[in-house]
Image (cartoon, rainbow, N blue to C red):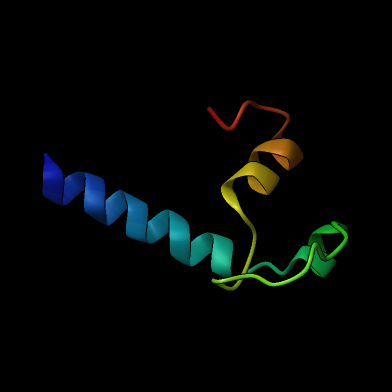
Amino acid sequence: MTETTNALGAYLRARRALVTPQQAGIPDGGVRRVPGLRREEVAMLAGISAD
């Protein structure tokens, strides 16, 4: 199960990295450690909880 979880996490991180905050209409909040959207930003755009 760990391999599946890691593969799914890697896939989701790769998808989030493809969209910049500017493309999604989110104001840039400063320094980002990784490219793309944060989990919370994706959840907000989807209308669901990040938890």
